[in-house]
Image (cartoon, rainbow, N blue to C red; front, top):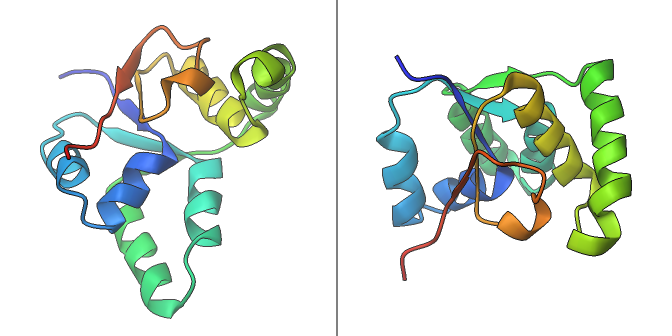
Length: 128
């Protein structure tokens, strides 16, 4: 079996919006799927009502959430400091990156610019 894979928030948002490429990507995955705890927070922050929160809750059942440890927090702070200005890497992106690095698993994202520190990156593109 292949190692697990970490998904960035943008893919899950597209899935919730029924974006065909995100639906195909997630529903065709045969590896264990992970999200960072910060992705959980970002999804709930964007859920405007009870129906949307229920959709987020149901979607997250398919994922194992990786909690933020002190090791991840320190790594994220260092990544934000190093790549914030040059690549626009915000704190949430740095936490996602540190999570992927701590688990040595690929990161799937639609935003490669914010993740120059990730070698094992899978770039997601919306199909137009």
